[in-house]
Length: 437
Image (cartoon, rainbow, N blue to C red; front, side, top):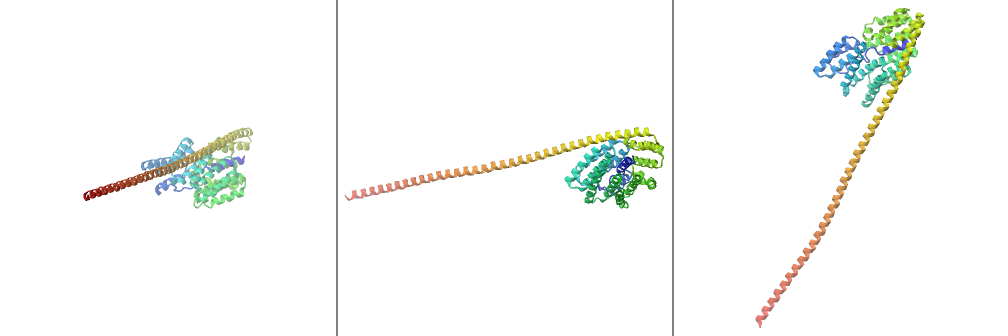
């Protein structure tokens, strides 16, 4: 029972706060970024809707898509906290559409989509999160961006955590750490160390859990929100170890921390309250607080243990039965989702293969066309040269015949002239002989 409770608590922590540290990834002016950063420090505050509306209108007036993106990224966490998932999805869809072809702001795109996927996992929509992660990984591979790979493996790690596969979750988070270092995105390392610590806590490897939590704490002077997450992670470790004195002290430290209410969503705080009340033996209060949890699976998970502690075994059995039915339905859904994802990936792979084959066919057709055109041109040139040669030969033959004819004609003229000269001479001789007589 305590293990199930712990898994749920760690899952809640995975969704609190923004997915990465607040960085001016869109390169907006300092005044605008300060307004945005203040909103991001309390991502679930309803006042962020007014700030988002102001930034969005400013973006439309200035025709500056960066302001619109800041506005949408402020809006969808509030929609998640309100349970307005349709408007949450719509805000993210618009943001994705704006950033689709803009390579210069990929880091903002990856970070924002990762945060959205955290909410999808928290809502049990792991298949959608998985498809988003795979799409992100393909884009990161195409554009050679290790930051995108880091976020995609981090999402898959969260999905495996949700499915109670801590070993696979650690594998994916470890890959994310590698790509975070490759991308020089050190600001994301402490969050990854927190995730790994949580998974080792599930496996009851408390030494490793402490080790990674301590690694995350080394960044708290740079990123104040890490101090809160590390503190919550230590509370889970103490709870799992049944070190109640340490757990109670950490809980009191948490609830007195101003960041706790600002950055932890309501379900996360209620879950921690239930653990505290149950550990103190205040079971009726713990039941009332558990009823405030938004997800049925979470309510059943908390309440059956409380009923058992109260000795209300029939209620504990009924609640546990409801929990098992809920988990079975989720398990079946997960299997169907996995098959759907596999089918989609196979179809996408087939489409890519068909597109590649068509590309090669087109390339071959174009190549054959060039070869055919070259062959036609080559043979046309050869034929033209042969025809020219034939014409030259024919002209040479005609010229030769004309030359022979001209020579024969000239000889005939020369012979005629010689004949006429002879006749003149004979006539002259006859005249002179006649006079002599």
